[in-house]
Each structure stands twice: as structure tokens, then as C-alpha cells.
Amino acid sequence: MGIFWMAVTGLCFVMVTALVKSLDGAVPAVEAGFLRYLMGLVFLIPVWRRLAAVRLTRRQWGLFSLRGAMHTIGVALWFYAMSRIPLAEVTAMNYLNPVYVTLLAVFFLGETLHIRRIMAIVAALIGTLLILRPGFRELDPGHFAMLATALVYGVSYLLAKVLSGEVSATVVVAMLSVTVTIGLAPMALAVWVWPTGWQVFVLFGVACFATAGHYAMTLAFAAAPVTVTQPVTFLQLVWSVILGALFFAEPVDVWVVAGGSLIMAAVVFITWREAVLNRRVTPVVAETKH
Image (cartoon, rainbow, N blue to C red):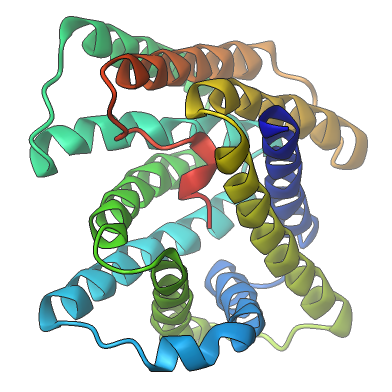
């Protein structure tokens, strides 16, 4: 069941990516992100009474604000990248999130980088080079946006990890939704283009699939260890390649598949090592998704 629910998670997040891609940049990136999060607030209505009763310390407010700022930047960059580069490349480069988290944990959580983890990180970086192939093709700004996206999402994840030990998961998710909506609002207004009814419908679909993906991921974690569910996230790349070819006329790039596979292998190895050492720092690939 853990494998099943993680497969559903991956399909939901690939649908998020495909729906955003279908907008073809008609709605500015920050506006699309803002509308996605604004409509996502609907899913907080059933728990608003519990949320209103929560009392946060000044430190927690600061951490939530910092996480919101980091995630706001990540969302804007991700939506921008989606309008610029192929579906499979976005998915493959998103696998870098857990690698960034592993590196950031050294500086923020005092983690130690042993030789095996260093080798896994080097393998992931080689995978990134296979995807980008600098010097062999022209790189798009979307590629650099995705590199930055993975980094800021990594920071957001570590902040969530700290806060999840102090408040409930519902509060962590709700605060992210609220702070990112607020953070994106002024940027969206600065480039505002009135969306069509169809574009609003598509963005609401993005919010629905994103919420369903996080819910399915929670069910996967409850049903099986992360070492079992992590490899299943590789299916996201498979589905992205298929959707890109069928609906967006994006040719299958063997270098992207090879690079994404190498990064995913490195993430699975790091996850397995953490399980052996009985700790949990590196997130599942989907956990840093918006």
C-alpha cells in the first residue's frame, strides 16, 4: 500500500506540473503561483477554528515568516521554469531537492558528511551535468531557475523540519499556504493579467492535485518505511517523459533520463543510509513540492 500511495503521489505531482505547463506562460509565473495558493486556501476551511486557537511564539513567527519567504521565491522560480523548459527536465532537476537538504543539514543541523554520502552527492552532481550538458547546448534561464528552486525548497524543508517538532503538521501546512499567498500577492499584482475562466479552472486543478498529492504521500508514509517509498518517486520522471512526448511534443532526451536516474539513485542511497543509522534528515523527493 505504501508503494501504491507513493505512485499516486507521483502521478498527482506530475499532473500539477503538466497543468502548469499547459498554460504555456499565458499567465505570468508569480500570478499563476499566487492564484494556485490563493485557491488552495479553500482546503483550510475545515480546520480554521483549530488554527485560530493556535498561539505561536515570536521565534516561531520568525521561522514561519522565513520559510514563507523562501518558499515564495521557490514557487515563483518553479512556475517560471515550467514555462521555459521541458516537463522531464523540471522533474529530473527537482530530484536535487533532497541532495540540497543533505548539504544544508551539515550547516544548519550539525550533520556529518561521511565518505559514502559525499560520493552520493558527487553522483547527483554528475547527474545534473548530464541533464544540463553545459558547453554542449545552450542553457535556458529556466534551467538556472530550477537549480535555485531546489535550493530554496531545501531551506524551506529544513525550517519545516524544525517547526514540525514544535507545532502540529496542520499548522505547518496552513502557515505555509498563508505566508506564500501573502508573499506572492504584491509580485502578482505588479504583473497582473486577468486570467480567463479556463485558466482559473486549470490553476484550481493544480491546487487540487497538489493537495491530493500531499495527502497520498501522508498515507504512503503511514503504510511503509521511507526506504520503500523513496524509489517509487522515480516514476515521476517516467510519467513526465510520457506526458511531455504525448501532449507537449517534447522529444525524449536520453541524457535527461540518464541524469535523473543517477540523481534518483543517489537520493535513494542517502535515504537508505539514514535508515541504517536510524535518523531522518533527507526528505522524500515529493516532500519539498509546493
